[in-house]
Image (cartoon, rainbow over all chains, first blue to last red):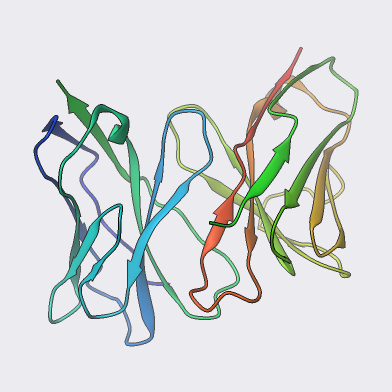
Length: 110
Length: 117
């Protein structure tokens, strides 16, 4: 599976958009980009995933560059409850396991 | 969305005893479940892949005799930490793959905090 690189931490003001970057320069054509987050002492929560088109759901938007070598997760209006570790993972369809990197620790402040 | 129930959420045991953790998929059938462990301030580490009706596949460095995994039905997988020692104290998390889902998402339990005294 392709390796991902994320900044270790980011800060965001409550109510503002949080833009979390992820680099996956070795991604292959059949690999999707997945985003999960983990709030302290809980299991990870699925956020969104995509292949090459931008995706949006009730939680977030996922912007994937045209060359697919990087992506950005956007939380449009961050709240204090969005404080968590966000993991960007690339994996092909039919995957058997999900391997987590170190993620980005997002702190949303009042 | 799909729900994965993990029990217990917290357990304290004496060194040398065994502890069983249950992972259930509540509204879907999961042919595959995964077990992770997580130490404080670290990322999740995959321990093993559990397939219904067959032996689990363990990641390199994980002792299969220490961490017994049973996946006897499409909705239940168990992890038993045998002869637990203080170094086994960790946060254990299970996840399940919805075999009927088209989006190939994994759903996670809420985790079990194991403390071995």
